[in-house]
Length: 293
Ligand code: UDP
Image (cartoon, rainbow, N blue to C red; front, side, top):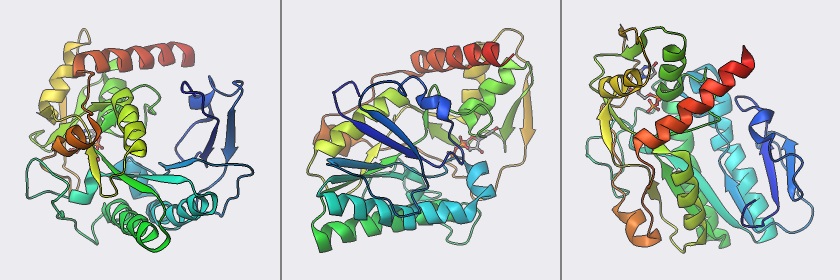
């Protein structure tokens, strides 16, 4: 919107919320369609770019809706590729670090093919995204669609749902309620958290590039989940300790993006550090809590 583009945003609201685009609704050049990408779609007029971000993305959500998750990565991707082909538009797929599964290489570079359990609880997400990548490459090779593939690592920021189950909103929600933080396993598993504005910038740069193969987008600053819990607790007075819970199956032990390709091809790297990003995110959730109360 800020670059002057006209946007059609499509969401079936299975986990999203209309309020997330509430600030855009009245702006000229913005249209919201409540629609499932798994159903065919036609858009009148010119379409220059299709960004296919549609998917359930939180482990608890895709465990609850495994078939919808597989569908949005397969049928949904096919419909969005068909739309791009019909309009001779660029197409960008948001894939995932889950393509690397529980990785045996660390950090993860795009050249690593991954260690995914094809029948595990996470497979609905991992395999649908791996299929989506293959389909995207096929549309490029067969039909010449101008495609890009981003592999997104853990991303956070305002407008996540407090109850979406991912670790950043989960810990903030618990800290706001004065409850102990639920650390799964012993908390030694690692993640690397990227602030949403950095990711958006990376996606826009990628959609300008001629790179057809996947590019990792994420923040390489890695920490254990226990360290992350301490980071959250530092920001709340009277934090209530840790509540250790069982580790979900197939939970990746280590995750850190190798972003040398993004730096080389896009000239991109994250700018927002964890302190700044968390301050903005916590502030957002605090204001939301006040409104809800
Ligand atoms: N996690 C946790 N407590 C929670 C939610 C998540 O310890 O309340 C852990 C989870 O087991 C995983 C990490 O935090 O190791 C990141 O989980 P998330 O669901 O945010 O994303 P994932 O990287 O697993 O897709």
